[in-house]
Structures are given as C-alpha cells and as structure tokens.
Amino acid sequence: MAAFKDRSDQLQYLLLGSRTAGVFNLGGDLNLFADKIRNQDRQALVAYGESCVRILHRNMNGLGLPMITIGLAQGDALGGGFESLLSFNVIIAERGAKFGFPETMFGLFPGMGAYSLVARRTGAAFAEEMMLSGRIYTADEMKDAGLVHIVVEPGQAIAEARDYMQRNKRRHNGTRAIFQAGREVNPVTL
Image (spheres, rainbow, N blue to C red):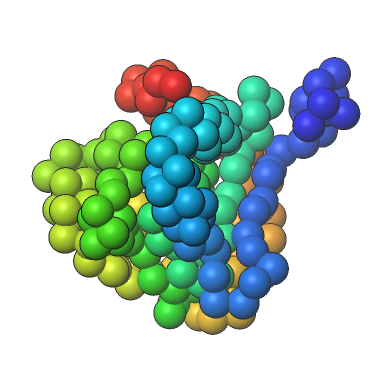
C-alpha cells in the first residue's frame, strides 16, 4: 500500500478472499492459544490479540486510503475469521459458506472486535445472541441480519466482485464517502 501513498486515487478497491477451498478463515490458532495458556505466556497472548485488533482496525479504515474494501467469503468464516471479514465495507458470500463465533464452546470469547463489529450493524442483542450461542449461520441468514451484503451461488464470488466494481464505477466516490461517514458516525476505536 505504500506504493500508492502519493497515488491514492489509483487504488479504488481492496479485494480479499481465500485460496483454500471452503474456507475464508477459521479464526485464531487454537494450538497457539493452548500452548501459550499451558506455558502461562500471557504476554504472548496479549501481543497476538493486539496484533489481530490492529490489522482489523486498519482494514476497517481502508488502510488509510480512499478505497472500498471487499471481502469474499467463498467458504466458512468462523471466530476471528468472521471478525476479519466484518472489517470489510462490502461482504460477498457464496451460498454454502457458514458464519459464527464458536469461541464460547472452547471457553474463550470473540475478543478481537466481534461485539463492536456486529453490534454496529445489527444491534447489541443480536451480537450477544451470536456470541453466547456459538450458533453457526448460513450466508442467507447473515444477509437477512445485515452482516453480508450480497449472496451468490458457489463459485460466483469473484465474478460478482468484478460486477460490483463495474456497476459502481461511476458511484465510487459517493459510495466510499458513505462508508467513511458510517465510520465517523459510528466509530470503532482501536
């Protein structure tokens, strides 16, 4: 992104997906968590958490560039992976992808921004229900809840992202400004 620092108008979109079929991101590294807990390495756990939060916060703010971020859920987005996905302006999900916060089943909690990211779009009650239940949701349920913007058939996310960018070509500045206004009206602090 540093290459675009002086040419920020040339970078209009950041598109992120996964090269692993069926998975967007399954969240935190449970083996790392278990190892650090067993070794009572609280400092390493805190550093890992702070690093994750900084990455999400930076993405939420478009990496400081005037662009729109698009997340492609071509597979499951669970735990921290779902938190990561929620940091994008636009989320395109393929039908069949699953979403949720299973952390409470492991004695953990989704602490990298889940509450603020979900509550910002849906309200606190739904955010709490999602996190406390550990329930896994479908792409259509997430669209109905307002957390996913577009649902497409499997294998169509990249094509839809291209179509979205083409459809919004003339409206890019206005769309980006609306997302920026949303961040300012309802900010999520680091």
